[in-house]
Length: 520
Image 1 (cartoon, one colour):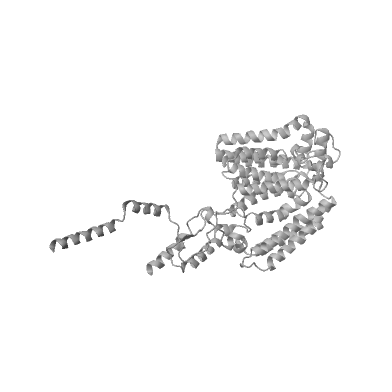
Image 2: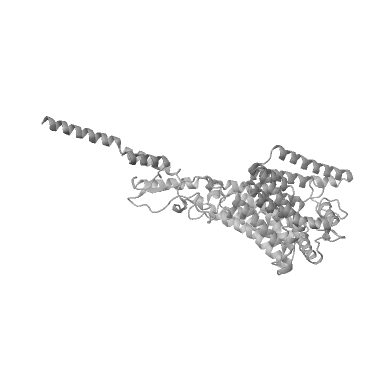
């Protein structure tokens, strides 16, 4: 009996360590079905976050002079407030997990923060000026061959984007007014880039973290009223994720496309190339540079050669506040405050802007990034300093560094463990141990890294890295640890050489029998 219990204890300890083939496993444990984040952190952070977002949104009807932003504020603030109530008061699911109220709350926030205001503004035809600028640049490109007006008289005639941005205005030419709105295509490109980056970074369950990020004011506000920076942000994250995996050609293509949208994406090029150099060597970095230059050059260089003055004035001088017509961008950031102090202040702002860029470049050379997360952090610091010290800037520009820091960390926090707890079937252990081992497996699954760090809601297409065998248990086939390679080798050795102690015993018995026969 003592031997049996000892073997059962060893079974339970070993069963939590040994993997199974993918075709022989099934999901087990509420933590692997989406309750990990809620169970580990509780509801309080979600409720607090929703209340903060509600306060942020309700401030726009009071301080903004744009009708589109005020409409977003009322809709999003109501959605966030309702989401906070749901996260706090909705009963738990049948399994006792807090994942159900969190999923419902995130869905309500997404509905109120993105879906309702976006559809409403699309139907009313309201948007920030950037949307109409991009759509008109596509019209001019088709009819005149240039996305830029030669001599704009007002700031609404300026196109402060590189020629690649006009691609998002093409649907406006061929689709109905609502479906052709550039905001839909900005958001679609952003979503595709984030999902691909998540897969490349090998994140865990995607639905809840993705919905929470998109529903936050950081993305929901620009998605509903403008969205012009979203493709650039998603493209930078995707390019660095590809570079971190050593995919030089794909990273170069994405970088080329992103750099053809806005020049503020250009700092991502040296960061990605240094990462490729660390991951894949000099040849990989050169391949990435070649593809970046090829794609970006094809989209930008012809227009730069044909319309150099228009591009310099509208793409460079206008966003920096150095053009004849001043940009309306003017959030009270340090660079803008300096620029308002006169020529000396503007010069100081530009000098600080240049020195910050030089300092970040030297830091990158001294300590190059070695993975995608570090690369995103370095790029986030560089662009944050640039936006803070530029003569003209907006608070909305800071969404790029925030998302650069946030998205890779979410993917890494939800990354699934390499060796999950699994159980296999056997016929040697007592039947009473089956329920105990299954209970232990459920506990390990709920408290595994995927369950603790995952933000809930599994992706059903990801099957087998963090699952356990939960098939029916029969009386003659109970649970035991899978045979290790050492066990199989020992078994093969015994099969080849036989059981030596048994053979010795039989030889001794035969000798005793022969001696007895001789004496008789």
